[in-house]
Image (cartoon, rainbow, N blue to C red; front, side):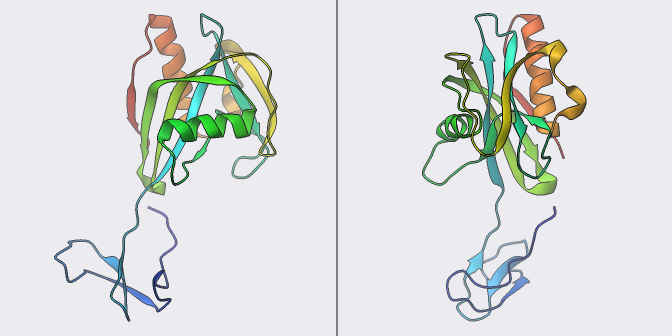
Length: 184
């Protein structure tokens, strides 16, 4: 996993060293050299939606990114979960912030482990309540696509591609299931 190492204690500001803690843990952790606080590093949660339009769900809403990474590429509305919100609340917030879309949140659709970057991505199905969008500053454009119209070569992230592939495959089979995927 790629990460920047912790250098200073969040409690007292003293330097940390990576070592096995004295509590019996079996993984090297950032341990403060002064107050002995152990700093655990955990995955970040990315939450978002697969916003679909119409009773048949034939169209999905994608956002053209106005920020790095992958500026100018298409994505589902998603971002990092905030403290104090549930995964569904975070997915709804991100959809509102990035696409300016009104949605009815549905069930969790994909859960993807992206271990190489220490992230877990979760996408909820979301029925669009109308086809009017007011994208925020992170989005150049928000628009609806059928499967055939999606610019597949311009999709920003593998997790988005996998989620879209699952969505359209499930639609063809007449059922929307739940998918767990290890991305790497």
